[in-house]
Length: 210
Image (cartoon, rainbow, N blue to C red; front, top):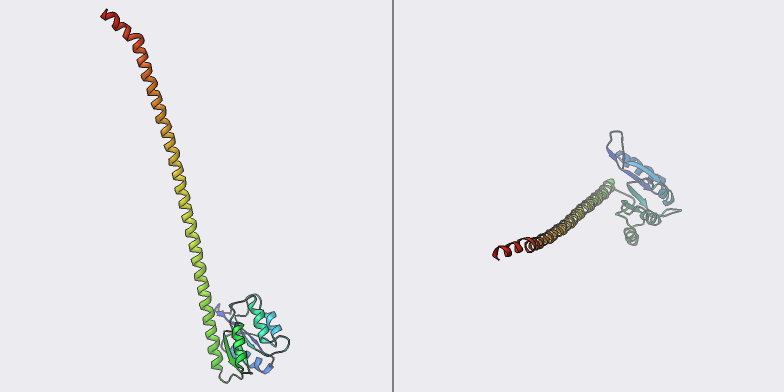
C-alpha cells in the first residue's frame, strides 16, 4: 500500500480489461472510493506493472489479447502468492470460474457489473482477507523469533551449567589432590616420629632401665 497526502494508507488496484470503456468506468468509480488506480489493456501490460510491491489488488478480465487473465494469474502467482485477485468475466461459464479459482483467484464477478456495490463488497472482502493473512504471518514470525530467542537463552543456560559442572569437577579434583598430599605428609611425619623414637628415645629408656 502507498500513502496519500494525509499519511493514511492507500490501496492500489490494478484494473485489467481490453475494453476501454470498462477501464475508464472502473477507474473513475474506484477513484471516488479512495483507491489509487492503475489500468492495463491486457495481461502482458498488467504483469509489467506488478513490481515494487504494487498493486495491492488485481481486478482482471479473463479473455484479452496478448496475455489473457488465466496466463496473468499464473505469472503473478509465481512471485506473489498472496496478492488478492478478483476475476471479472462476461462469459459467465462455470468452468471459467472454477479454473480461475484453481489458479488463485479470490473472487469472481460476472460482467456487466450491474451493481457497483457488489464490486465494492468483493474488494473489501479480499482486502480483509489479505489483512488477516498479513497479521497471521506477522504473528507467526513473532512466535518464531520468540522461540529462537528462548532456545538461545536455554542453550546459554545449559552451557553455563556445563561450565559450572566442569568447574566443580576441577575443584573436586584439586581438593582430592590436596587431601592426598596431606595424607602423604601425615604418613611421612608419623614415620619420622617413629624413627626418631627408635633412634633417640628408646635407647635412652633402655639405659635408664638397665
